[in-house]
Image (cartoon, rainbow, N blue to C red; front, side):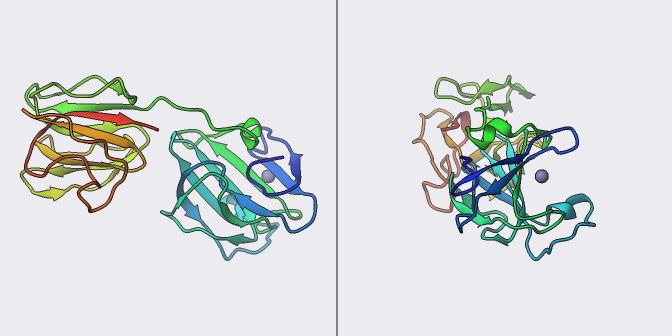
Length: 255
Ligand SMILES: [Zn+2]
């Protein structure tokens, strides 16, 4: 039994070079809820499409949902009858996100399920129909203002941190996560960045960090480690740092 369709179901069409997903059929009844494979954030949630055997490109998916997971992978759920979620919404493993259907290019009611790697490339999803996604190594690095250079990447876990004691951090690069920094001189939050599309920061001192869906903390220059932060919001616990105080070390845990 799969973890993406509630109730009795099985794979009805396998993954191949010409079918880069698996189809999961249901065995009757009304247990045709589609479930989020793992915790993540909704990237796409398309609705309003009907069955269309002449559909091409993304239209073949009909109503579909795409989720970005915290290891950087994506899952995609196509041909839905109904979509319960919206882009930007956080979902948890097993959450009901829609109903199975036959929208788009579908010969009958089924779920077309895809798994995509961190580069959004479709991979064989067969084992992930039943299992967790792989745990990826998340790397991150900081820009050292005093040395005027990027420091080496470190692995996100509780043993490592990025930065040099007493040298201010001016920018941040993190794999997979969505994050932003607060510019001390400009006294404002800079734009969020996603993964390594670009870095966060102006290579000027920063005094706050927000990383969505990570556990993180910072060390103050000439100070100490501040408490771990588990969320991102406008409260004092919703970011790491104390505004007006420079940061010299950053530490990130992924779970
Ligand atoms: Zn399919």
